[in-house]
Length: 127
View (cartoon, helix red, strand yellow):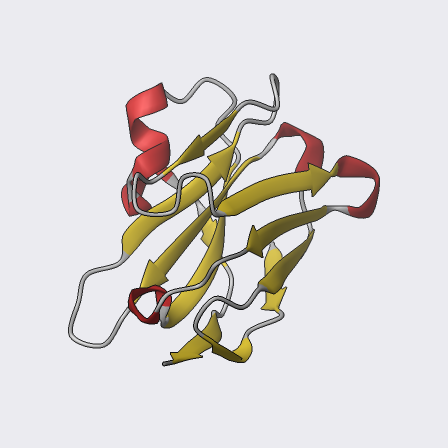
């Protein structure tokens, strides 16, 4: 299984970025996909997730209304559209896949709820 994240970069406060994560090796359409982020000296935290079956989306309170997660099963890709970026959004962003089709909902907000991880893409937000 491979997850390749991209799209990070430097952006000013209030700007936008779109992260992408392309997967290979297992059935993408049956994977719940998540985005997490980790800032220096902080723990990895949940950002957003999208279920494989319903397509329902979940967000951390800190990004709700600004970030949008979406997926295209035909392209084996999940995106994270990030708008109105703040300095506190700066972090390395990781995509993750949960291939367990019947995971409990509480697990999708936890790093331990995911089987596979991408390498991370860095987002820097300047004030």
